[in-house]
Length: 119
Image (cartoon, helix red, strand yellow):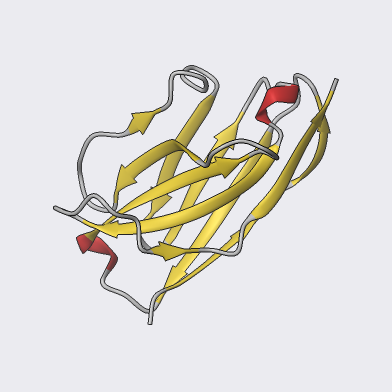
């Protein structure tokens, strides 16, 4: 059973940085694409960034390009989201998710971690 556990959220000021971590277990992750989503109060959940577990193209939402970086550590089975130059509009619950390569639906989800950016 695939298990995704996020950590690293918190309360920061605008302009600060945070690094989120997603520890993955229970699956053959070379078959998966990993994604970071976020959902702010009253807004739809959006895909922020994604990365294939093996070689492939990274994706970034326009709103975070140049500020966020997604990466993975294949030894630790961990995916990271480095968030720099944070803005108040980045405030949301951030979720780690996984989908099998060749599919479009993310069907494995973590519990989420809160990121709050004060102005």
